[in-house]
Image 1 (cartoon, rainbow, N blue to C red):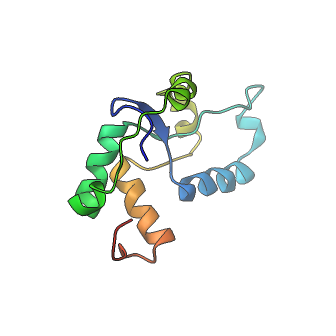
Image 2: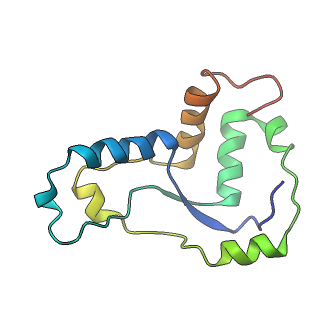
Length: 123
């Protein structure tokens, strides 16, 4: 079910990157953070349409056809208040990193969660 419009934009990183953020944070010298200990982690800003096209490139049309567009006003209202893009410059300067594009996030999902192959019937 897809409850939001295709032009809805979100900030993404894979679970693999999220774990990498935690591991890197555990090893970073706190002195380099100074008084500003909050960081915005790197990620990919992508619209739902861009995510769907990345899915099409990786998994094919059959998988994309399984997406059901079912608008939900209450979910749209919640999502409308979420930030859509960030500037992770400081975190990157401190050595944090994430995927370069949404297609990479999908490929990592396939590697980490699906044993490296798209199963019969799709992602």
